[in-house]
Image 1 (cartoon, rainbow, N blue to C red):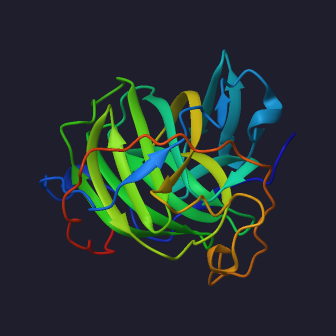
Image 2: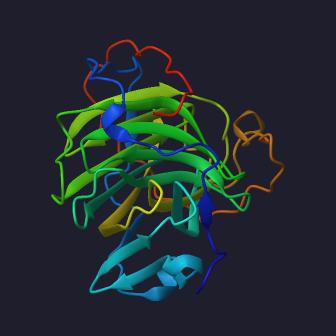
Length: 279
């Protein structure tokens, strides 16, 4: 089924990634968490009902083609991004993985995944670029991105038109980005303490022709040890998702499978807080 159109023009200026900050040593949060051993949802992009599709102004489009999800934008009116979502199985605490390929290897672009997306068009965004940069941001639903971690370079990201496997962790207030199996960054934030859908997005600087192909999206339930995923039915009152600054009703979810404990390696202290300036 078709969902609400999701094209967003950024209010900040051109994002020229080659002028962004340098590399920093990756640091981890200290907490351990577990991941469901079975994927809660796998999307192979062979059914148009699985993800939002459509053609919008300025030839921007969301399409399912040959088993891939394809986002195209041309950005004639300034830096912008286009995104589509799946909200058929909303969860709060998830690990999202998808393979993404930037067609043409354009430099001034960005693409990635979103978690906890609701009807206000807000949620967390985990982004990389074709020239090897990354960022973590809040999509505020008001035509902008509020950066929790601003653009920095990482050797884990394959440049140009090479595929990258993006993995995003949204567990309680913990957010983490992995690329091609390597830890890139993490951050804590409580702005979107709720269940929500999963999104895929791509964008670029003004007049930038952007085309990104996404392949095989998996979504797994996750939790910190001894604390259940608060997206499961009938949570304890203390675990009920709280309201955000933009009022919205938390969507109901279907029962999830019992988590099979998969303890991750010990982690190190979280990294420094990032500026919210755009690159």
